[in-house]
Image (cartoon, rainbow, N blue to C red; front, side, top):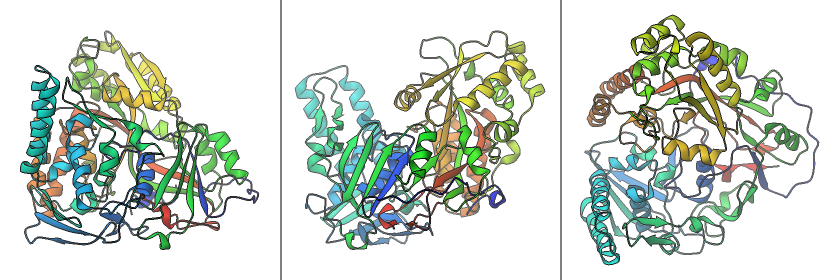
Length: 571
């Protein structure tokens, strides 16, 4: 689907043949190197979380694999108005929750409202802004909470929530004429809206069980979400599976949802996922026949290249619609209040120019991934004219000149910088190489900070870093799945990049109906953002996974990481 030049790169991995051992019949057994962060579909953004969400919750439409076309999910059919502004979804009469309750349009409205509430700090709130009135509601609630913080009082908090519910009904273009019909009115035609409704943020949640564990802070008026609702004893699902067990940093067990409308078409009896942060013991466990699939072998891990030098049919390398990059904190000041030298785009460009991408993919990862100078992977999205010509490349001489212009000749005075990375996934070797290159070629000294994944994510969200490793995979097949990340109001904008002209271009593209004109506008936006370098692109991803296609049927690795695990058969 993308990056055809990778064909030679996508060699199979070889290991000694795995012995055949007994296993629980029909259960698909996964080994994962990264733990889940959350099972709340409105709050998740990591691929590992979304993969499990697709097992537990069913959106209105689902992605068919391997074609990646959309097909009916919880909605059996839908209509779109001639002007492209109104979508009417008709839910399946037989669709139910895992406790037997009927699935209704109100469950979707409730879930989407959760994502629109600034209280819950959902990373993907902005995706809902395609819906008429959603952004207005989000801003109204934000302003009211700010005012509430100056007033306080239990009665006032309750009154504010009642006003919020009324404002939502009055403002947002969501209606349920009956329990099985959902009508959505958009701000403007959105050619990828059906792709959005297949994404995790748009999944439903069971209103009664979630509301029972939701509190209203009597002082701030903020809705407080108790994560206990995602525990096995509380979680009610409408997808193919229900949650039987989730032991953090240990394992997860899913079994068939007895009330799932399409359970007769499921190809396995459950999902078993074991967390194993070290790739080497994970490979040994797989080799002993105790796992069927390792879905995410980190390409940054030193062992990955060793595996790629071998060939066997149970290892799969797939070009991915994803980019490995470094976040460069753009805030004027750091969290301690000191001036942030990375606020200057010249410093950001200089550091990016100091990265030898060729050396990294040839000598560090040794996987020869396509070197990245853009955020959107070239050729990943049809009809998109990637602005590769404006991307930053390795240029030590120019980097030194930029540092002189910024007031840091030979790196003098450029202090207090560190590279933050999560210890899972083998990111330290890349960070070490970049650290050494900056010190040797630019005179810039940085320290390395390796932390576990949960702490890493929290520090990104609070901008408690100067430089951090990062990655981004497209969620839907449109350039905005990448470019919206750097809109100033986006919850995933961890670099806190702010450029009014960039925002304006994204907003202009959202109103354009001509495909080529819209794509050209988005390409201009990316070119503008790349000139500022809030990120330093390093390489475009490949995804490496291990499974025996003779034993595991229905797994179709693809550039977008889309899987339908209920359709996977284990022999």
